[in-house]
Length: 194
Image (tube, rainbow, N blue to C red):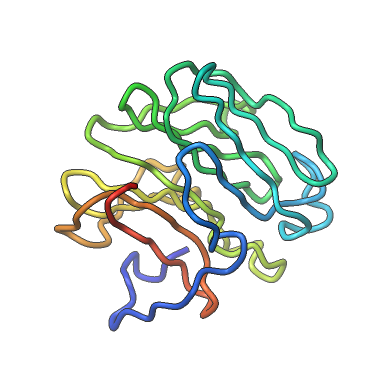
């Protein structure tokens, strides 16, 4: 949850925590998560999970030290991916497919994984669980950050990702990284994608 739906003023930059401090890739992402998919019993900081996109096939694979690589979904022509987990260890994947941003998530209303297409013009969405610590379970959210029309926005899981919150007007580029920093604040890195 971002207090008052606004950036810190003044800005308080700090280095990203591991694994959010990894170099950003469009076909790989890493995120802390639980002991197994759909199993938050060991907390959301048990191990680092890897999400991998095979751009040739559109296969999106997930793995962890105690979880062999398995296929989450196939969506041909996907070019970017980003990983988060909800409080129940359901994967949340933001992606770009044929230039169109979207996400794949567990919708509690339908009790199944759903694909959602975002508005045209949304670029390079990135996601994270804002606070994975056990003490934050009741206040934590998956955040979905993106740039649309040159402005930085985010959406929250608690709103079912339906409400866009403007964070900053007039930014250049796309969201490159999003995650918790050493000062326990979420940071949105915006710039040109390499």
